[in-house]
Every structure is written in structure tokens, then in C-alpha cells.
Image 1 (spheres, one colour):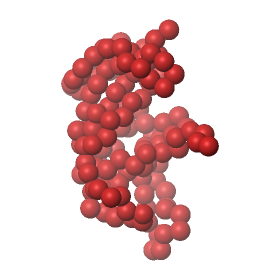
Image 2: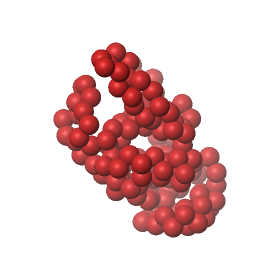
Image 3: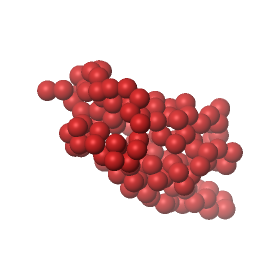
Image 4: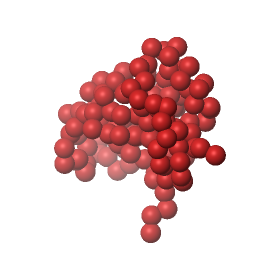
Length: 133
């Protein structure tokens, strides 16, 4: 019944810091779009990577349908990286991003992954992983 994940919504307290982290540190692309069917038109932002995206919602700014809770920092995200994990670690170190845990072996959707864990500006857990061969 479910084919794949299209997007998730990330709730942030500081849109500018959120966008900077995901674009400058993690290399995602910023997309701006008008919410379909909104009257008046609502301008939205998203962070694109591969065939997926994170839509950005600023805490306290509502849209329909509304989330049950408007929580910041409650996400636990895992991204598969496109570069060797050692290069990712070096990149993070060069940007003074603290690695909270790892590298360690975990289980992803397709098998074993080697992961490190960092936090975004809203304190969400961001797991950066590569598949173990």
C-alpha cells in the first residue's frame, strides 16, 4: 500500500538557523513554494535532498491540517550520506558540529549501517549513516 516517503515536516523555532544548518552543513537545497489550495496564498519552504524533502514549519505559524502538538526538537532523523562517513565527520569537524555518538553500527531499512549522531539547531537528533557492505 505505501510506496515510499515523500516528505516530513520539521518544526523549528528559528527558520533562518534551520535553513542554514540543513543547506550549508548537510548540503540540502532550499525550495520555496506556494501551498496548493491556500487562500490567501501561503508561501512555504522546504529542504530537498534526493527524491524527498523536509517541509519547514515555524512554531506558532499554523496551517491546515494542524499538528496535534507543535513540538520542537522531537524528531529523530536518519539520512544516508553520499560521501564516505570519514569525509562527513571531517566536514562536520570543520564546521564545529559536535558528534554526540558514533561511529557505531545500527540497523537501517536495508540492513546494517554505520552511523554518527549530531543535533540540528532545534535539538532534533540527526543520524548520518552509510551502509555496511
